Picture 1 (cartoon, one colour):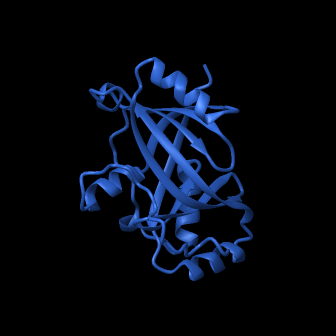
Picture 2 (spheres, rainbow, N blue to C red):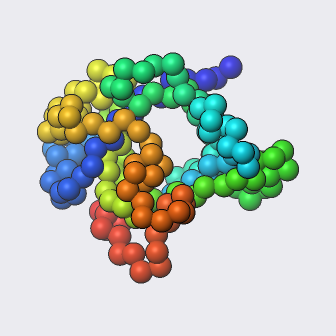
Length: 190
């Protein structure tokens, strides 16, 4: 089985221009910027969510189907999940297949993502309807090293998902994270 452990951390970004300059100074390689839509699927009774299993499709840089599973790690230092991902050709066909096997409860998340690579690290600057965040994926040591070089402190670490962040700040009953039609993107001109 091709299940890997994915480790990541997020930081809330208050000064996008300063962060961009630091990434340039570190010679991070810019891969591209794109609109990304993720749909998380579950049963109507939230069975998968209740068991720490997350099936989702994602369009943006690539179309993928991902299975993420909680690990047993509970030390709260980095967000850690088992991840299995396959590239798919057609999101709508995959959505139909998932609905036919009972995964009819859907939650949508939209973001605009700037994607970078630095050494073995994946770096994303994500603009969501509720703010701009930095996401760093890699191994523990490299994540901590880059975080320090970018000026972040341990107390600034966010070790939950965007859905978890949104759930704490939302002011309505809707779990979808979507931009309104009048949203003016702050990072799309990078």
